[in-house]
Length: 69
Image 1: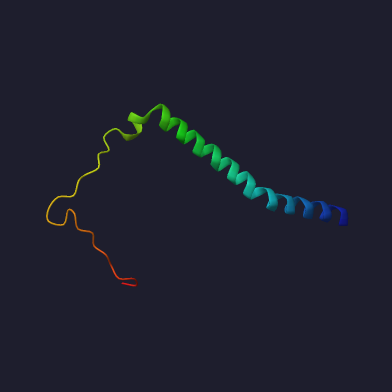
Image 2: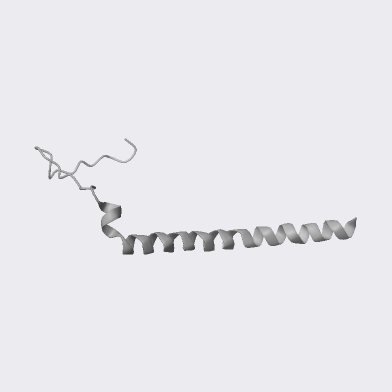
């Protein structure tokens, strides 16, 4: 029974150490896929999305708020 618990402890520790690295690697692959897709099809991803220019009196005015308000 002690041997089983020792193996289980080692497996749990290995999983805790490897989990962040595996998560990061999978995240990097996902980002790489997204970048490749955006590079290959730039017009498809941004088609129809136009940035609106502000109109009216406050078009060039930036409003600053005091911290904490």
